[in-house]
Amino acid sequence: MACAIQYFAMLGYVVSIPLTDSQDYDIIVDNGKRLFTVQVKTTKHKTRYNRYIVSLKTSYWNRKGNFARACTDMKYDLLFVLTEVGTCYLIPKSDIKTIRNGLVLGNDKNKYKVYQYQQVKI
Image 1 (cartoon, rainbow, N blue to C red):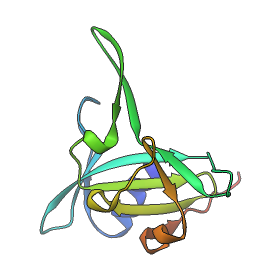
Image 2: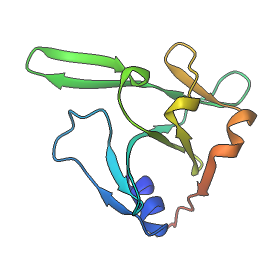
Image 3: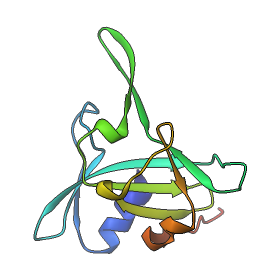
């Protein structure tokens, strides 16, 4: 989530974090004109064709036990994805088409690349 916050902060947007984790989104972004709700995901998993795949399920605990919910059923505006190599994508929810609750980051998603996060070794 830190990479998403950093990305939006670099753009000069105000980023808010909900007090609890029971919302359908992870952060709220204010660009000065509108508020956007953002679901944040990371991935290191690849398809057999060497394309990253993002699991679009969210697991959470409540008083009745553990639940999993498909992110496509959730209410948010944007999906921010960080891959293990630091490539970030910002995808409007309306453009998300899943296969078995997963989103493949193929060449058709290159237009959504927004940031290459460079890790600094200390």
